[in-house]
Structures are given as C-alpha cells and as structure tokens.
Length: 418
Image (cartoon, rainbow, N blue to C red):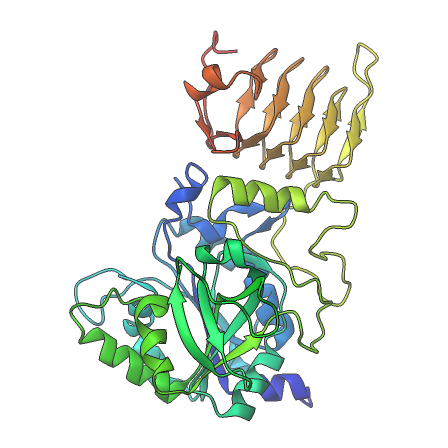
C-alpha cells in the first residue's frame, strides 16, 4: 500500500501531548477527572480536538502524558482512540509518571518530557511535536513542520495574533522580518506589538516543534538547574531564543486541509469553558465542526436518536437554537440556547436556558434552569429553580465570576432543597 505524501512527511516526528494538569480553575468539573477529559460541545472531550488534529495531520506516533485523576481520560483513549495499527509503528499510548528520573511526579511541562527521555531515545524520530491536551482548536500541523524543516529551526512555536490589551494573559513573542523570535516573555505587563499592527500582539499557543537533538539537550540542561521551574514557557524557551534558532509559525495562515476559522481557546476557567461551548450556538459558529473532511473524532455510546414527546398535560417538547446529543428525551419541556449531552431526560414543564448539561442528567417536572453547567448523573428534583437567586445558589454550588452555576457530578439534592 502506497503511503500518502502527508504521512511520509510526518513519519519522522514523534508527538507528545501534555495531559496531566490538575485544571484547578475548572473545578468542580475537574474534581474527578483530568482537564483534557472534561466533556465539551455535547459529545466530545476536550482532548479530542488535539487528537483529531494529529489524526488528520498524519501524526501517527503519539504519547499522551497523563497524571492527575487520569482514569476517565485513559478510558476515553481506550474506547475512542484505539484506531492505529502498531504493526505499522503507529500508536496512541497513555504514559503515566514512572519515576524513571527520580522519585517525583511530573513537576512542570518540561519535566514531564524529561522524565520520559527514554521514550525519545528509543524512537527514530528527528522531530518532536509538543502539544497541550486542553485547548479547543483545529489545526493542520503539517505546514508548521514543513516550515520548521525549511528554516532549519531548533524550535518552532505556533503563534496567533491577539488584541494588545488581552495579550498579558499569554506568553508573547517579538519577531524579526524572517519570523525569527527575538524576544519571549511569559504574561508580560507590557506586551510587544506586532511589526505590522500596533494594536495586536503575537501570542504563543503552547504548540511547539523541536528538533530532537535540541529538545534532549535543553531538557538535560534544565534538569540540572535547581532554580528552574521546569516549564517550557518560563525556562526552556527563553534560553533557546538566545541561540537564535527559534521561529514563529503564524496560526490561521497555513495552506493545510483544515478550513481557516483560526479559532483557538484555552478553556482553563469555568467562564472560558462556558463561553467556548456557547460559541457553538452562534448562527455561524466561529469554529467549524461541520467540515466533512476534518471530522472531530470521539467515542459515543450507542444511544437511540434524540426525540421530543408530548406530555400528559399536552405540552410539546421543544428545542430552540440548541445542540442535542443522542439519547435525549424531551417530554414537554422547553430548551433554549443550550447544549445537552447524551441520555439527558427533560420532563414536563421544564425550562432550560443558556445551560450545559452533561451525560445522564434528569430534570424533574416544572424545574427552571438558567446559566448552569450540570455535570453527569445529576437528578434535579421537580419544581427546582437554579440560576435565578445567586445568594441561594452560592450556599450549595460553585458560581463563576460571570455568574455561571456549576453543579458537580452525581450531586444529591435534599428533599427540601428545591
């Protein structure tokens, strides 16, 4: 069987996905699962987006470095991503901490890879693609690797333009006319503007391509530095820039196979996670999930199709501008501008507005929900109102800075709580 030119181009690359972070700012959604395993968009997990990019880009050797509460993530990898053929040297492998370089768990993004240098040494790859498992975006990595090879770079960093007044939340880079990075600062107080637009700054997306020799040498030097925090943005990248072999790759301008929506979101907080979900409900969503040649892969249970039912009181189940997964049954409820994951049950007289419901949620009769995220397997009692009284809600649930009420997984309501 003849290999595609894309696969041939990418077969000299090893991919490492960092998926071990606690995601504490996304609590309580991360109380029982790693951040990359948090459900998103009614049917996906956050990690699905990075893995899908790898799949369509022709990356076939992938190590997923796990750590924090990884069972849900590893189960999802097993059920939804056991798709490569190891006899062809293809794999997606979860790699938990193994303490091969000491007695500590992963202590930073760079340390996570340093502790697995033996996996780099035993590969025959010339390049290492380092990705985060907790961002929502679509990207073809092949043009970025091609640029890396063409420039002979030690390191290439994917960057995107962000408004100058928002750039202090990112690692920001300064570049010369050849796209060589001449400055890098993590979350600067005064971000540098781009050469062509003083209102924009160039921000790192946490997507790196290293030449193998450079990465191994950098990690070994960093491991011997007692003052290092062992983080790519804080420690590894600034030192490499001094060697003048670091280049920027402009996200959104590539001539790859993915349609250029140039959407990228770090869903690290409840509010950013909520907004990224709500983005999917725009008349024209800013991220294109409907490109037939770039489907986002995931694992789905075999639930029956979603349906609406007329209740005994004559109410019709209705959905307005909402995303509805398989297995959802709406028996006389009204759902507006919301995202419902699989197997959700909506009973008579229920109203749901601007909310996100995970798998297996059941909403009792005549309940009202607004601005909520409800984690898996929660049963809302009849006549419950959530999202209308912040003072009352705050005694039971987490409320985000922007007023989103989060009900944790399998929360049990007391009889008089409603």
